[in-house]
Length: 337
Length: 253
Image (cartoon, rainbow over all chains, first blue to last red; front, side, top):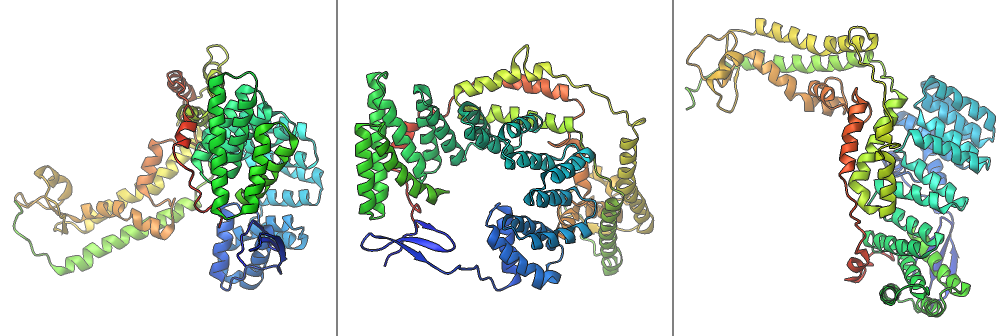
């Protein structure tokens, strides 16, 4: 049985077997079995440096490290406490979070960093007033502390006050223009509010500082595509192409390229030359998509795609066609993220 | 023309060369710990941080603006450089010239810097010069001109001696700079025993702390931004993309 992992979580796998049937296989929770301390430490470090959010795994590995091997960790233990504490807050392990916090408080009694962790714990317990007071006290001491400000904004977001969160985040960004995390958060907030023009501005900032990141190009193109209108569609097509150029395997961008090109081609107010060009682009995108599917010997997928594409090429605005393409994007989108 | 090869007493190696190395090394480590003890955190000014980030953004706009659509680039350039309302034109920072005599914090910083770095070097250099003088310590492997003789051969009054043969004081100074990488190995990066880094720090004036005159920095950034034109990098991106098939290697596991 040839397995093709379309999506796999820690607990179940979607597998396509030889008869091209979709099968869901449940597996026991495969823990990451690491046998020696240095392996566990390296794993934790890798997760820390690359900003992974696999909180359950971090809690498992970290808890074992802390409980069994605390003495052999040396000075690393403090940063591991911090990492495990944040992961424990994610998994609602309040006991573990509290014990980590106590250790850190004992070692670093006056630290702003530890205070911020205490504030995060209060946030997890939904005691937002107390958390806010704590962050305010940090900011009184040190007005340039960015972490406390960002936590306050996340509190607003958690409480659902998105317009206030947007306003605070704007003020924050006026002072700290270089904070990319904040720009990304702001773009997300604007997208939720359907304010696509401002979201596009934020994504432009991100693209400017990270010109080689294909994901920002692709997100920007998607926002432009959603905004609609001929120039925005043109821009969207260009940026989808740029995302593809930066990463040939970005399937979302490929589908986006196809969609925007076919939309422009189908629009009544374009000149013949533009129409011809866009039909050419759309045809190229189609050929690349079928090539990708053929590479995987997935006739079901090819059928689905060609069906969706043939429907959408005739009447690009039908929701059925977009749904068909959306399903395929969904499957591929999971792979990409 | 290399002079006659001198044969030095091996006890010079044992009692002069090695001790100087050890002395330099341990004094360096001591300096590192002392600096850490009497060091206090630099208070960063919010305004300075903000300004340095703005300057960074403007610089990035100049470098990577070609990846943005023309409209967005024009919008940002306008925000910075507009003659009436542009940021660089409108914002003038009050510059308080930091007088080292009156400003107490800079005075203490300067004193601490001097105390931990310059003073030990002078003291120990002088002591070595006094204690280990009158003989040749080592030979540098490359030929030197006669101009270097008075500098490198303190205490050795020989006119015909090759300038490559140096005294112990110069060996000490060689060590001070040479052991820098040893300190990095043992004390980790960013250690206070590193003399040349301190000199470097005084010269650059990095992205964190602003040079004392932000107005000048704004003006130069304004000029640089004025002359930048927007040449869109995505002009022909589709053509470039489509001249060959996409490389799907690694797309599916």
